[in-house]
Image (cartoon, rainbow, N blue to C red; front, side, top):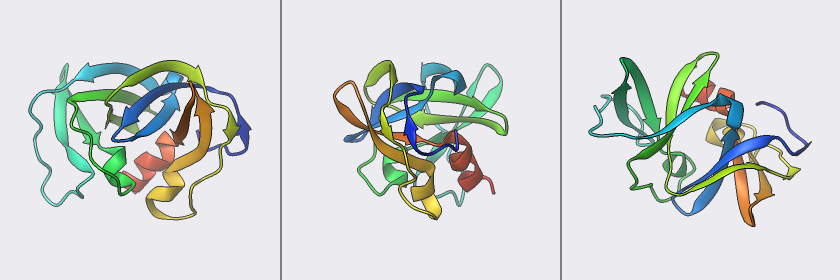
Length: 141
């Protein structure tokens, strides 16, 4: 995404921990339930591990942990396909595809904060939009 300012783009809205997030709906491949994860030695706590889906390996990221919150216990993930690769974000509840309205400015200039834009409003929830490309860059510089 990488764009800040007033926005109304279509996002898949989901919760992770106690917070609602949005990801660009055009980057969403599917929502899946994952089984046992393979741990990645030396990975930070927000990288829960990897799983294989139809022969492709997906890292699972808990965005709540990444932002310093309580982790998500769900075995559900939003699978994203980006130019640079694929990743999966843990998801508790799904809100569906919705417009996120607001001044979607980065939460910070460095580290994980730059991966979150907002807050915006969708479906009566405060929503932080995940800048998926910035998140991928953070994970694989």
